[in-house]
Amino acid sequence: MNEGEGQGEGRGEEEFQPLSEVVWQRDLPLRYALISEEWDGEQTVWARCVDVEGLFQDRADYRERLTLKDCAPTGRLRKAAERCAEGRPVPFGDLNLMVNDLDAEDEYEYDYAYCEFEDVVIVDSRPSTEASADPADPALLDLVVECIVTGAPRPSHKEPARADVGLLNGTSGLPLGRCGRVEGLYRDRPGPDRPPVRLIGCEPSPHLLRRLVQARHGGDSLQLWLIDRTGRPTAVQEHINVDVDECRPSAMGGALIDVTLKRGLFRRVLPPLEARPVWEAWHEGRPRERSTWARFPTAGRAAWLGFAETCLGPEEPGAVCEMDGRYITDVPGLHCALGEAIGGPGRTWHQCWSALRGCQCGGEIHCPPFTLVWHDADVARRALADVSEDTDGELNYFDAVVGFLERLGITVELR
View (tube, rainbow, N blue to C red):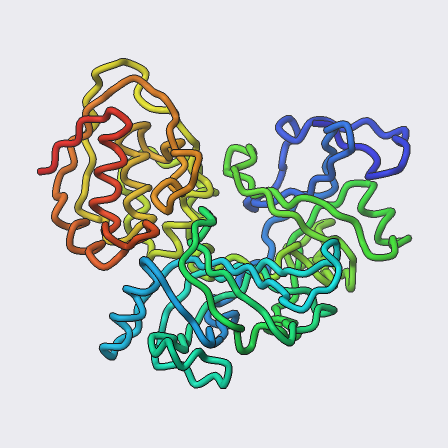
């Protein structure tokens, strides 16, 4: 990986060393690098930074309340609605929607919108109040949900006068019923006020220095790599827009500068605040001890899985893998512990867990048969008793995972 000229420009006369060979001759930690990638895969270094501010946001800032009107739920959505009607919010997970315009005149006209709801909680379930509700079907409901809308209709799309909204189970696409419309879906979503993104203690390459003098309209699309203490990139490589708003000498001293950007990460929803300590932990390098992930909350454990290196399974047939179940109190914790049991600290098992939601891929990654000894299994059995992702809602997550493992030919011993 050589430093050189940026995207769409010829290479200059400067010759640069690969990032891994450049000595960071400072008593300050090197945490981030700005990287551009050419169409042919060539990667060039724009800058290295001591720190970056403004990368994380409280997930609560993104949560919205919407109402699924005139709703006829099925499967796990119906069962969740029934539990909610008893007077308590019900965490549901992910829900996708397909909004079909019933008045589209041309069969080739754009007549649908695909939407994604993340981290859904059903907070109210009551009989439908829609005037369009079928009086012959008293089972129609209005479901009030709180969620993070990660995929929504474009602002230019107007809500159809008449629509049929298909409700889909997470990433599997299997149906969970329908509703007439979603109150609050068609609106502008500017998002919460973001903190400014600042590159702190930035050591720029000649290319970035030239861009500070002569800015490009709209900025430059780069990658932000998290670097560990050895100078190697981790699995976190965020896309970022480098459009400079301000530049000043850094309090870090020397020739370092602080650069404030006009925009920042190419995300509508930034990583959660709980991810920050996880990023800091992985900056120290791949963990050598087991259960390092256990001290983090659910959102932090989910972020941990983004760093973990995948493994296909034990190398030898008939291996016995011991899984510490003491800290499996949520879904990400289960996958952290399982990957660690199979591949060691800092590993995750390469399986498609969307198969638990009905994904047609089946989730099967073939590996030699092995035995999984699940210690303290009752911890997960209790914690995941009310968590379900299968379309019918018949199995809780614990039982679904055990059954899935056994279908893959793995012997599961619960202790």
